[in-house]
Each structure stands twice: as C-alpha cells, then as structure tokens.
Image (tube, rainbow, N blue to C red):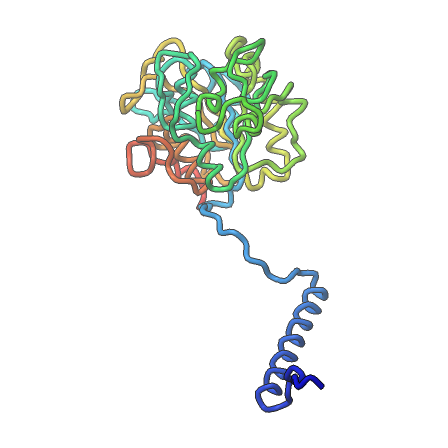
Length: 333
C-alpha cells in the first residue's frame, strides 16, 4: 500500500537449481562420512602438528643412569651385575693400551654432568653451582615437543640447587641452565626435575616413560659415598625392574659413571682427562655383545641420545660432524 516492493524471493531458475543440487550433494557426502566414522569407530581425520623429530631405530624411550667416581677397572670384572650387563649388551670397553675405551671429560663431578647434557664441561675443576645460558638437552626436548623427566633420589624439592642429606646438587645439571628457569614455581626445571624418595620403591615402573629420563641416584646408591659393590647391588635391584617392564621393548637404558678415580684417572683421548669409566647400553636393539669398537666419551653419549631421539646437536664439539659422533654402531638399524 505504501508503494514499496516485497524483498526478492529465491527463484527456481537454472542457477538456483544448480546450487540446490550442489548443496544436497555436499550434505549427503557429509552424512555418509559421519556414518562411516561411526561404523568403524575412527573419528574424522584431523590435522596433527608435524613433529620435527625422526627416530632412526624402534627406540622411543631413552634412559641415562649416572653412577659415581669409579674407574672401569673397578666395575668390569670385579662387579658381577655390571659385568653381566656388559656381557649381555653393548658396552664402552676397558680402555687398556691398544683397546678402545669410554672416557669421562675431566674432574670433578659437575663438569661431567654438564658435558652429558650440554656438550660443554663449562667448569672443569669445580663442583660449585653456577648458572649458564647455554644450549642443553632439556631445551632441545622442549623445542621438539618431546616429553622428558629427571628423577633426583633423596632431593627435597624439585630442581634443588643446594645439597642436603644424600642429595648432591652437583649431580643435577638441569639446575645450572638459565633457560630451564631454576626452581621457581612453574619453570621447566621445577616441573621436569623432580624429587623421588626411593627409586627402587617409588619409581613408576608401570607407567610408560617419556622420551628421555635422566636418573640421579642418591650418594649411597650411586657409589659416591659407599662402594662399587654397594652401587652394583643397587643397580641389580633397580635395573631388572626396568628391563621387565613392557615398554622396555622400545627402550634403551644407559648406565654410565661420571668420572674415574685412582690410577689412570687423568687418561683420555682428544684432550679429555676424566679417565676411563664404565658405560653400558641395555636394549633389545643393541647390536651384538661386547665392547664398542672405538674410543668414546660423555660427549659421544649425548650425541647418541640426540641421534636416537631425532634431536639436533646440542652445545659444541660433539655432533656427527666433529670429534665425538653418535655411537650408532652399537644399535641395530
């Protein structure tokens, strides 16, 4: 009545009809896709973030257990359990004249733990606690989106940076790295480097482990303030529980000593002065039985962990282009 026109209506011309047919086809396709997903129990595909890692072996869980202050000659041969591991799996060798060996980096403890995790000793001659802004394996694991944890036996708080009781701070390298944030609440170190009262009793054996696990026994269990025999006995109660777990079928457990003491404790190669120490790689995927056929060190072990987890080289002078390559020959392809 006011002269205005009604809004235009959709017609049923050729173009509109074509649109209707197309919409109907899309609805039918979506309906069948949903029915197929419901029938098979598989959800519709979603885009997953691409991982920046590639695993060269079936190993998905890497453990490093660090023991204390013994030359390889005090372990291989005299200690029954660790000798049996060496004779069952691959190990680093005795380091005698004309025989390959596995070597610590320098003295005392802290620089060896730092070398194992950053590729740099940083403070040979000192166990003091300092903070360093250097690349480290914790940072690499974070960037790659891989899970990791460090268990500190007898520590009182996460990422503890002071010694107390049976816990020594120089055995916790992650507290030295500024990029992991120290012990402040919510930091990477505070959430990933955790106390555990007793590894033998309290370790979560039934839980599938993360990609990387760093295990710090207390100073009795690691042999530091006890004896080689005490440490061997402790390993014989802890390691078999790891081996018997279902996830061991895709794991490797490295047991390594931080530094050598006594005769030959300054021996090494390529400028290393930490002495020959025991190192064994326990896994269904170690190749053959016996000693690794080349000299190696904590730097090579870090390179090996990074290689197994598909991580880039951390720190300096230890990747496959330098003097300290990954010990790939220890593993089946």
